[in-house]
Length: 188
Image 1 (tube, one colour):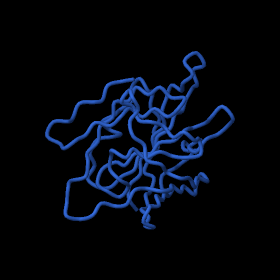
Image 2: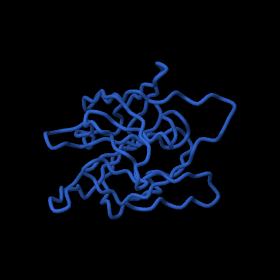
Image 3: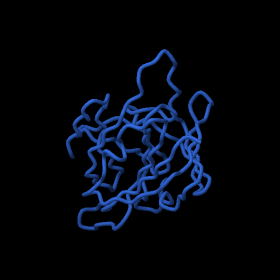
Image 4: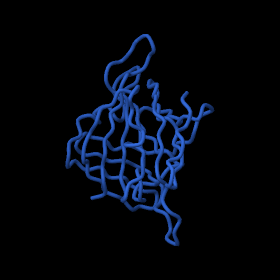
């Protein structure tokens, strides 16, 4: 796996693991800003993600790092994974939720992610029963070899959400997709 990215100078940044959903071999070395400590209580952890435009209503599990320093992936293809070491959805900064695009038997949770368009809604339901709503601003496709980690994981002025899955051509010799799809969303 790839090493973690260095911190950005002058910002309170923490290194993110390389996002590599199963079947993916991501060359991503992401970083992001963490929320500033405050006297306010943090939002609850995410429990579900609902994306009406593409028919997603899935459980969100917390993910940690694997033995190689990469983001562990959901064991099940019908679940999305949130990196628990990053910001929580609704906190300032880019919360990251990733999911499989497919499995050996068919489509997975984020199979239709590339179909999202500007203005589509994404709702993250939290464990305490509250929800945070995001609006899709854009969808981008990146070759893993040229993944713009700072653009995807860098600090933001407000709460944002990044949804990531594998995409593009499937390389049978390596068993991995060559690209990633990233959906950028902001709070509604």
